[in-house]
Image (cartoon, rainbow, N blue to C red; front, side, top):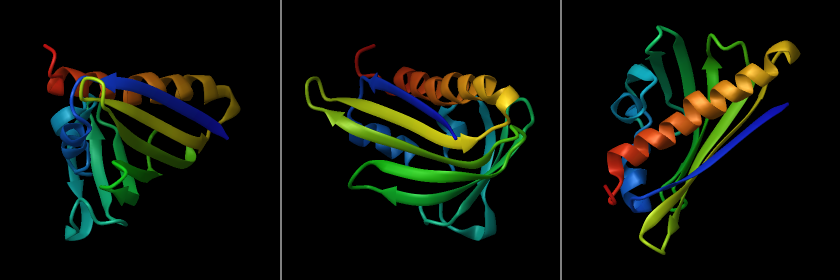
Length: 147
């Protein structure tokens, strides 16, 4: 099992960051890798069990299912159902924690998945840097209160 963990501090209140990321269908609005997104079967984007279908800017199709969402804990968990990455059993969690010193936010994004041994390092780097860290950097640029 491959594990990826990335964390960052975002110079914006946790509630404001959560309002941006909590919408499971809103990634194209804040993540630089995502081109479009839609929730399948007419479900709402905050309903556990909903499936988002999106394309990356390079044309890849990914389908993910929302497994858990907590407004109290500022966290959601999702699984990849379909992806060109060649991973299986992929489950990821994004969690935000308020940092009261400066009204900032600590973000954690982690995933566990199975990957072919020969691609494990490449996929770990891709998920960690190109997906998770790139997402945190985009949130920082969009929401920072210290510009």
